[in-house]
Length: 331
Image 1 (tube, rainbow, N blue to C red):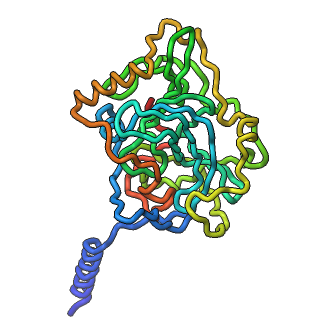
Image 2 (image 1 turned 180 degrees about the vertical axis):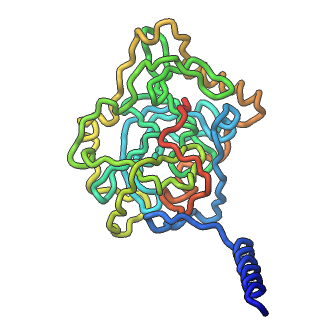
């Protein structure tokens, strides 16, 4: 066999190997800096129900188990290796406005707060609520990772110049309900909760945002993942903890009040001038009408624990994932 034939045969053989490799190649995973964490421990017989986007009124209401009213009287902090740091908003004197009945005390566990490592995890996309304030809150009937509140639908009730006003976590007044969910005032009428906070001890001073690898696969589709920050070094392993265990370094309720982390901001009466504000009763009536029109039921299993995924699990990222540092404001 002459030299040309040998080279031609070698080229064909090489191409065949490459084609074979292309056919059998598997998707390449993107490793995170943290080890993969286990799935949440579920109660016996518990069946997960996947969360879905909340881009429309229909999607929001279809995933709403209950709309309740309650007074936020206490904030607690816990930590778990799977659930992560949690801020517990403890509502008392709770009453159901629509959907599944709630007990007189309801605890809403939102991702964020102090950790055993002396750091503070803050997720800017999640709502921060004000102590000693009455709220109207929509809670999920699906499972979740970051927050049980449907699309950040938690509205603070205020009385201004003889009118009842509902204010969303970003400080905008609710003026109605439409196909995309709640309608808001053009401008804020109040500061966001915690906007004027003062630090306490070392925890607030060492505040940090979870790094991008924690959210690469976006386990909760209602929250856009954050990115753009350099990854933080993985902390040293902590002793094993039971679920919802207390944290020795967490602030006391007195320190929380002093720091104004959850201070109730003032409402501008001037900013509310000529705005057609909604009361809680008007909101619930509009929501019921929207649910009936969309042929969805408000109700189902009330899911108060983060059973969907561990907060920073997932060793891979889907190709082409849309990663953004902020979310479109969903009132």
